[in-house]
Length: 402
Image 1 (cartoon, helix red, strand yellow):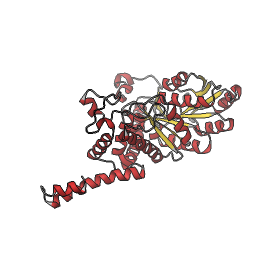
Image 2 (tube, helix red, strand yellow):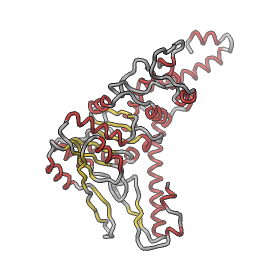
Image 3 (cartoon, one colour):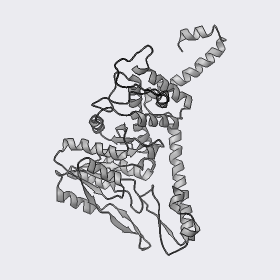
Image 4 (tube, helix red, strand yellow):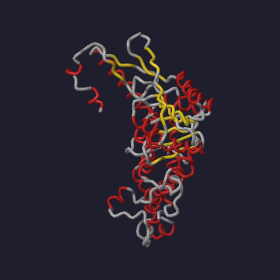
């Protein structure tokens, strides 16, 4: 409400009440001003009304929502269902242009502004988590596997004759298929078994750095496009030695892509990624939106210590894209704020400790044992010992955790 409207409102409502209302409006406007000026998470999360007011303002800036606009001949932002329009806050233009998923759209100033701010907030929240070396971040409208594929395809442009990707084995399909989908050949590297101190038959798996160096030397730097390492995996596997891998890649001029799918919420993963980015070569790091920021499945963040690499990934994306993953992240991170995000990270640590303690107690009671993998914060493995009546006494533990 501008000053003229406020003066006219005073003809209907006492001036003190109008001023109170204007003060409330200005406080919400100040939130937006601070957000655009600082390009960082708010200290305190926004309430629903503040977020909705911003989204309504942004959508009103898109051409499909202009008053008096017929939109004749338009081929986008034509939505039949009012329910669908409301679901998307009337932001129907998507993101990017045909040659760049992060480009500004001439007909969608509001949507474009939302995308740019969301990318800035993605960078800030990664800094907040501990990845201070990140210089640029991009919210992609595809999940982790497809984002890894896009990164590999972009790297392939500058090294077209390289056809191999060194991949320390992890029993998860999407990262493996991302290599195949990029038209590349994985060189699968088996992990090394590390025995536990108590000399029990079990142990945990870690990166075979000697084997990796030998594999690099065998195939040669010119034939190897990249190493794809992993920070978040299933016990008994520990996260890859990303710092040492980064040093190997730097020595041999081989690209290094880190699959950090779950890792932003795990302080040890974040610390190792940060060390790798500062001491060796890390071209890009990919992390899932849904796994780390509690939004629906469908998006990922690609980040790097090089702004140029992130820009090239954005330009490699073919065509425009859905704004939904970016919008979900934008809303969620505004409502979390710095304090809310820090609280979630702390709660996660406390709950993880609590869960391990309870599983240890249950395992001892039933003659089982829990394998403690020090370099794995995101997965816990229960190891079978002697035969026992665990399955008959309790429902399957896996079903309970699901």
